[in-house]
Image 1 (cartoon, rainbow, N blue to C red):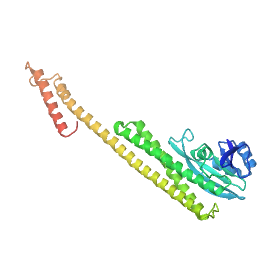
Image 2 (cartoon, helix red, strand yellow):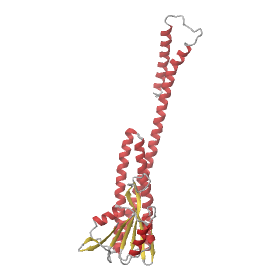
Image 3 (tube, one colour):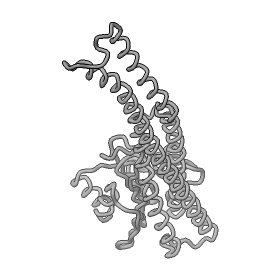
Amino acid sequence: MVVYFKKENGTLQRLTAPEKGCWINLYGPFSSDESQKLSEHLSIDIEFITDSLDIDERARYESDEGKDLIVLKTPVENNGISDSEALFITIPIGIVRTPEYIITISPYKNNVLEILMNNPPKGLNPEDQDGFILTLFEKNVEAFSFYLRIINNKRYAFEKALYNSLRNEDLTNLLNIQKSLIYFVTNLRTNDLLLMKIQRSNFLKIQDEERLDYLRDIIVDNGQALEMSEMYSNILNGTMDTFASIISNNLNQVMKRLTSVTIVLMIPTLIASFYGMNVKLPIEDNPYAFVWVLGFSVMVATLFTMYFVRKNWF
């Protein structure tokens, strides 16, 4: 899907064809032929498009013949995008800056670009390319923070369910949350490195001090999101280890109880097996032999049961 936007009369308007100073948004996936046609139509390197459509592409920036590419990682819900069972993953957003256009490329729909298209912030203007890119950076950090809150709420709900049931399904849900946090920690860290490199090299060629402060604030917010994701990941790792210990301890308790029951039941069985032998046995001629044997079996079994109860084996 290819759409064009330009600010007219104070609002972002959709165009039917690209114009100078407009914003072009490309949603993949595209075939090789489609990517080639878009590359020729927009006069950009085809690798700018293919790299931005690769969900495993790392965050980075580069320039080629006066055109700049910034690849940023953004969070999305994993609705069949990846074979991973993680609830949330990250995909790239490619930002291409040319003298004529600002172009965004992403393999799938995501919250960051959808917000910019459907509910653009006041003052968003594609002709102001530096401001547009900084706004996109800010919205991307907000998207990570938004999904982190969702992940934390889901983590709490799954943990609460586990306290009561210890079902395999709840453990699997926690594992999928853990996978999501690994995606977030890894890619927030790469985004953080990208933003700091852009700041140090002044890749965006920003001269306004106010905008440089804006970029520094975005870097701080991204760092906070990274710390939050690392904290949630550490908490979840500790929780998984704790539940693994609880499950192992519960299994030990069950095995101990079963062993105790087996020993208690074995005593009457052992006595009965002796008196089932076809040999001369004590009190076999006594008319109350059966009662004596039964009573003795019950008494011994009761003594062992009381001993196991005192040892908390039952």
